[in-house]
Image (cartoon, rainbow, N blue to C red; front, side):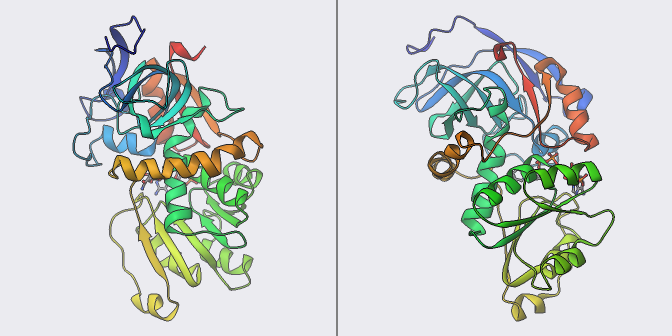
Length: 340
Ligand SMILES: NC(=O)c1ccc[n+]([C@@H]2O[C@H](COP(=O)([O-])OP(=O)(O)OC[C@H]3O[C@@H](n4cnc5c(N)ncnc54)[C@H](OP(=O)(O)O)[C@@H]3O)[C@@H](O)[C@H]2O)c1
């Protein structure tokens, strides 16, 4: 056992995606409790967040960065520090934390790099804090760092009811932007409105026309897109002069046609990024900004985790099926026996 650890458990329950395939291919397994190496912490997991990327990993349509396992999925957890590795001075056993990880979250214990661990924000339930890391790191770096969204500007968030969407709406609203969001049902639109967006039901109207109407023909300063494919051209059509399209998802596909002339005449910017493959240092820099500028807003009541459902770790199959059905609003969480 690590010299900084007092945990007694040597085996833990985990959910393995080793087989690959549909949701039913996930299976409960026993695994050794891992020991933290230098710079790592061991977290006694209370909650683990599901992400769309987990589905893609499970069915092997998302190439994993080097060194990432397909066995135990899970990009984010919350819980309590159970042990710290050599050189870790920032956390002590028992601290309530949440963490961004590259894998391993669907388990009773998980390893995280100490610089990617944040405290559970004050006022947030420890299990629900598992809803935060992946979406907040992703939205912060894409909307505010790459997209440079500022107070007084406007943003269109696609998939407004997704885990990413509910985060982007709240953050953009909290930082003084005008927020428009697309969603695929009346119920989902209502949630987007509650969180501070003007909603557009994209199944009932053309979102480009809606944006032109709502902005008096100006378009928006920023589009955060998870769809790609046929949305590429339409997103550009919804942008204002000097506007920026930030692409973070490819739900409709990798390829698209583009009228490049629009880029020139309207001086548009197209960018995108993926969080998973970025270095620990780059992710840690995002985490520091979140801790300084965003985490205090939870205490002030300006932000909150939006949780659709909580499943027991052993019900990961049902949790994946719910995400694939696409009827959820916000985040889907797994919780362990350590949650109570
Ligand atoms: N680049 C990055 O670093 C990064 C990080 C995290 C997530 N992402 C991406 O962000 C997106 C959202 O992730 P999430 O975990 O928040 O997802 P999620 O909670 O599962 O939400 C996905 C939602 O997207 C909407 N949607 C729009 N077009 C769709 C389509 N063609 N197929 C299926 N759903 C569609 C659906 O809502 P409607 O009913 O309203 O259509 C669906 O509920 C994913 O594409 C994910 O890969 C990227």
